[in-house]
Image 1: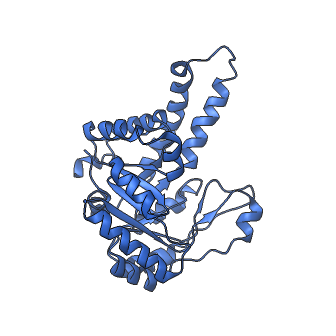
Image 2: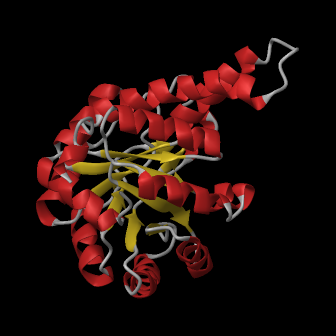
Length: 286
């Protein structure tokens, strides 16, 4: 049951749960995510980053769309962190039902103008749009993490941004970072800022950098109004760590002998996230 993000998140917002948005880089990862979601009877968002799309090629989206159209669970095919109109147009032409345009590094007015342009193009063909406001951190090293300046999303800016751009959902900065946290780093989500933003906006809120955060903080974020949470590193680490173990058997060379165990490891993590976000058994709401 393929739909756009606006339709999918409206139900999550009404019933106060979050839908996992899993970044996938190949079809085996995609199939593992779908297996987990169908077993849990949970809605799901399949995300592909422009870098991932450059690697997989456009043709894979036809197979993904076919699978999503045939499944009984509600789902979205979403472009993650599109950086330009060209990224967005490629996704729309490939059949994505939702796109993110990330202008968060731009000055506020330029971010607004970019999102306005994307909304005009995407909404004309029933494709939903996610924007981003504030700074989502990076975690490739402790030094980089410590040196960065995190700009938290201001509630008044979030309200103005949504009103002026027409975005269907907004990724906010409340203390998460992309990737896995370096040793010695303990993240702390600003639930107080989340509550303040939730009080003044009426669109679904998105949490990027959802991997590797304490479950208790993620659960609290869901309780206080986050309706979409991005997961990439956690499932990929599970997939490739298992692959490293499997490949210790040097006689293995066939993908159908190597990948099933990797898919199973990814699926286990996906199920844990689905339940943490309280999305399990929510497909029946659609």
